[in-house]
Image (tube, rainbow, N blue to C red; front, side, top):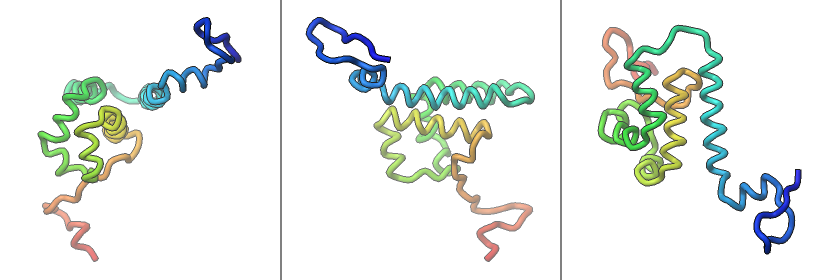
Length: 134
């Protein structure tokens, strides 16, 4: 559907897509779609409610990117999860990349997707290590 242009001196017609592109809204729309996708998948899952500790962690990752960035770099997160050095650099400086990574982690944490790679433990007590089996 075509809309009349904004402003008295604007030429041509605007569509919703051209107006959004002109306003730089593509990233916001992408992030919104990703968030909605996660929420729809969580809402569609039957099961018991999240425990308080898990729920608090979920909300911190979802809503506090400063906290999540500290969680990545100030804890053993990078020892547990394989995160490429180039991505680590971007996570330190790029808020959009950090939000995309938070979505990726949420999908892993909520068991919606196997979106993270876990580093193999150095020792495997009580079992044989996959690295030892060749």
